Structure formats: structure tokens, C-alpha cells
Amino acid sequence: MMGSHAADGYLRFIGGQWALPPHEGGPGARPRGSVVTISREAGAGSAPVAEAIAARMRRETPEGTPPWTIFDKNLVEQVLADHELPAELAAAMPEDRRSEMADTLDGLFGLRPSSWTLVRKTASTILHLAEIGNVIVIGRGGNLITANLENAFHVRLVGSLQRRIEHLVEARHLTLEEATAYAHREDLGRRRYVKKYYGADIDDPMLYDLVINTDRVAYDEAGRLIADALDARRPLGAVR
Image (tube, rainbow, N blue to C red; front, top):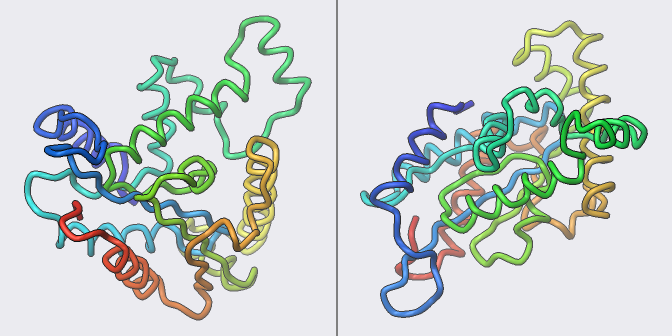
């Protein structure tokens, strides 16, 4: 997975030669790149699929436009930087909900911003990235945050629990028991996060442009399908 170094390069680019007004549709307006949001079941292959999309799109992206960049774990770092929040908050921003009691006590004693505040700041950062485009945003309700953007394409990755656990064992070097517990914990946490903060069912297929079963579609092939869909939807002359 591309980490903070790739994100740093993206941000340096948009802070320099891409520092033009956002796309507004008028003459001379800066064209907007696409944003792909990926919602995923744990172990369904979001990292390799995102890498496959980015690799394909980078080959097709003309010079002078932002490099295709993946925002996953590094999204938290970007949220903290955008809103000038302390780095220690990273550990307090899981893709899950905290108990109402813990949230209330932290707010009461000024220990940290509430979960609602952090979620709103996360949404603000995701919208900023989506306005520029050429980004892949994994998780955090990205599809719901960008639901009304014409340049957004929403993907859901699913798979059988058995195959997902096998992938977690290999990718994260976990035991079978650890991978099983991780899959259940992450799936539940992501489902609660989307339900609590966006009032949506993460498994609702109507929230996505494309749902891919990675039991049946290899990760590279999934990346190619998504990239092909982006090409098919992109207006003539739009940024790749």
C-alpha cells in the first residue's frame, strides 16, 4: 500500500503547479480528476485492488496533472495535518464508534475532540481530495461523503469469510484465530461507523456503482474492471 510518502508527493504537486481554481465548469476552469471510493469487507483485497487501479491510471495520466494516489491509513495523517490536530489523535480515530460515555467524558474534560467532530473533519478532508481528484479513498464512508460528486465512482469489495481470512493470514502474517477475530471485529466496526455517522447500511448495494466479489475476480482483474469503468465514464477532455 502506498503510504505517507506517496501522499506527500501528491500534496506537494497540488500545492505547486496544480494550484489553480477548482473546477466550476466555466471557460478556463481547471478540469477535475476522478475519485474512487472503496468500501470493503475485511480481507477482501482493498490494498492490492487499489494498487492495481492506481498503477493503471498512472500510466494513462498526462503530465501536469496530479499523480494518482491512494488514501487509506495515511488518510488519518492527512486529516490531522489539514485541521492542525495533534498526532496523538491518530490512535483515537479507528474506523469504528467509541462508547457514548467515553466520548462524553473526553469532551467534558477537554481531552480530545468528540468522535462527531473528528468524523466531520475527516469528511472535509475527503471532500477536499475529491475536488482535486485522481485519488482512491479507502473506507471512512467515502462513498457517502462524495455521493453527490459527478467525478466519484463507488466500489464495494466483498468475499466469503473463508477466503478473506486466508488473505488476512497471508497478507498480515496472522494466525488463523487472529485473522478470524480481526475479520469479525473490522466488519462490525465498519458497519457501526457507517450506521452511526451516516445512517446507512454498508452492505446496501445501491450505495455503490460496482460491487465485486474477490472470491471470483482476481485483485488485478478487479483493478482493471474499475479502471475500465472510469475510462468509460470520463467525459471527453477530462483529466485522467
